[in-house]
Structure formats: structure tokens, C-alpha cells
Length: 410
Image (tube, rainbow, N blue to C red; front, side, top):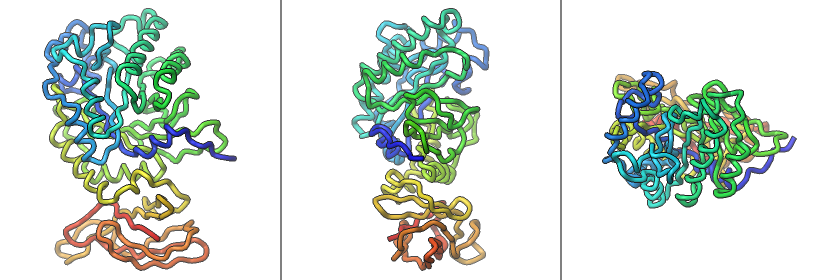
């Protein structure tokens, strides 16, 4: 069975490879995650008063885009409206529960989009479909869906070209008719090149939904290889993950990912051709917290060390042992090798399973040389006519450890 050719927008999306997810809203002032209104059973009149203190004084779209760029990220997906129903954009009369009517007094999505464009970052819009604020979500669902559609139409018509729309919440009413045909037709009419994503949630990782969907989601779970044989449409894949245990900032959450874990997860995504969308939860007034910024920057140093192979590399049929794998970019093969030891005196070196031969099967093109990308060291190797390649993977020089080491073949 044949594999369908991806649409140009999907091809562009896959080359973005790595993006920043931003969950930020009124809930950020409480510092107990993005679900605090629901989980904390905060009455609506009490919760909505948070808008009076939502000054967004530290929110700078260009500064956030610069951080993403320096971290090696190519796109940012921001919560234009989350489940609490508060919008970071000017809803143009649909509701007064939005940023221009809050203490911020401005359209924060306009600031965000302008910042992204200044730094060459592609803006994506997250938009909830579940709404705890609008009474019609439970009282008159058809009326609510029209409100939702008009809200999305504002996003599609007021901010220029965008990378895509990322929806979340259909899982809250699995038996309902969400009128996706009408919603997606609105997007295609105004933003024909935008990606359409609708998160299937923790319980349906990688599920393919409506025919207009351009990418499946893997929320908090490493993506599986996509089997696209015989499908009518090529659908991309994206893993979204939190830096800690919450999407919105958690003031007492200390369980953060390390730069090494970010690198490993990015590699696991690219191994199967999936994008990696890594979340940050800005502070109450809109600044990316110091640890998250530092961790992203350090992982970004690793990305910049390896150049375009992260963005341009495509999965191959080559198989390594354990987590080892290969990508192909511009006709060249690149081996991603995990768990290498550091060379040095045994009294000071720790970690890794050691250096030595690493075997890869399915290498069907002749190899004439191999070298590490980080230090340009030539590596010994042998190749059989059956497609077996054994490469002598030397350990890290003392004073370095790139977590996942990449060898370029030619």
C-alpha cells in the first residue's frame, strides 16, 4: 500500500520540528496550574475578579520569541483562550471577558504575533473548545458552538497568516456533535495554509480524527511511528509535554525536566518524524521563569551544535540497539547514539555504558567515512553487504557530554 504525499503545509510543519507551548492566563496569578478554577471549585464571580489584577506587565511577545529562537525552537503555540474562558485576544465584541477588558488593557495576542514575526518564529494559536465560563456550553450547546466558531474566525482574520490552530477539549463531550465541519471550513476559508490540530487527550494518543486534521497529538507520551500506508491523507504527529507537572505555572512544583531529558525527548520525537512541543508556564504577569528559560537555552546549545539535521532529518528503516537510531537529511545519514561513557581517569569518570562498537542494520547505501559532529573526530567502521554497519563509538572527551551523540556518515 502506498503512503500519501503530505500537503505543503504539513511538510513545512514537520520541518519546524521543535516548538514552544505557552499556557498562560488568569490562573497563572494563583500559581496552582491551569485547572485551578475547576479543581479548586472556585466560584465564577470570584474567579473572574482575577482579571482586575491581570496587568501582563512583564509580557513581551518579542522577548518570548527571542527565547524560543535561541532555544532552537521554530514555532510557538500560545493559549489564546483556555478552559476558564478568558481570552488573551480582543474578541471584537463577542465577550468582555478578554485581555483588553482586563487590567492589561491590550490585545496580548497582537503583541505575541508581532514578536514572533520580528524573530522569524511561526505563531500558532491554541484555543479551547471546553469552556467553564460560558453558560451555553451546558445550556445551549449549538449557540455555544457558534460563539466558538466566531471566536476562531476572529483569530483567523485579525492577525495575518498563522501557522495553525490547536484545539483542546472535545474529549469533554465525547458523544456530542461538535460541528467540526463548520469550524474547520471557517479556518480553511480564511487560513487555507494553517495546520489544524485537535488534541485527543491523554487517553487517545495518536488517534486520527476528523478528515481536516493535519496532525495527531501525543500528550505527555512519546510518539509511536505513524503507519500511513493506505491512508487517504498524510497526517503529521506532535508530542506535547510539560516542563514540570502542570501546564500553567505551579509555584510549588519542583519536578522540572533537565536539559538532558529535553534533548532525549526531542530525539525520540524526531526518530519517528514527530514534532516536539514543549510547554512553559509564564509567571502571573507573563515572564518565562528563570529555570525554564535556562533549561531551554542549554538544550538549544545542543540543537545548534547539530545544525539542520534536527529540522531536516527524516526517519529511516535503519535500526540500532536500544534507543540508537538514524535520520537522513540531504541524502546523508546521521546516527544518534545514546548512553556513551566519558573518556578519562576511572577515579573521576561516571555514567554511560561505555564506548565501543554500535551496530546498525538496514544501511543500504555505501559508507565511506564517519565522524562525530560535535568534535569532527573521524570514526572507524565496518559495513557488510547485508546492510550491517558497525561503528566504533568513542567516548566523550573528559569535560563534555552531549547526552545523545550524533555521527555523520558520507
